[in-house]
Length: 311
Image (tube, rainbow, N blue to C red):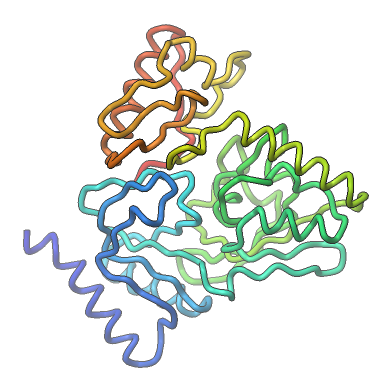
């Protein structure tokens, strides 16, 4: 047990030492309970969560984590992840300071900080009569998280409007990755070894009333079809390749709406949502995910892949 706790103690001592030297600007919460930082409201205690003031702080934390053989994991709005309740040997990175939430116009492009919510990006583009981001309205994700997951809806995805992303690699080097440099796939980006800092989006001029009408249409569809009555992580499963039946339809046909394991429940409104109906644990959610996968496999002979990331 002592050996297991050694990296944790060593990292915390290093953080105190570095902060005393006036570095690692921002907020560090040791032994952080991760439940408040996920939209499904589950998750155990991590080594800590770091909210840097600037990119220098990220570099310092990357170095300290690497020296102590600890993972530094970016977390956006926590809307597409399930974090275990078991002992986590991770530090989480949350880009919530103003430095990472700026949105501005540069020429005809929008530059958006990774910590800004994509709904803010939609509103900013609408105000400038720029179209193309409307499908993102209502997605509870930061720009960085949306790029990492290649978030999308209604036939669009964020890769379609991305021009380039400014990222930091695991050695602390800032690089600019053009859209074609990033291996985008369905709900996947290939950016696991990078931390997204900001992004440039290429949109097109349109009429403000048309943009607003489309945003309202998408938002109304989202509110009418998805379950917002309890905390969730959004859609749990990817839609199967080549199938005319969505993951939600498969789960519904299997009669799993309302199925519960303790506080975790398959939504009665949207079968691809698992909602936290009480004090659900991440393990409850993971068990329910496994149950749903097994049932769909037995009925459709299809192995559902999770869209949510389980940590």
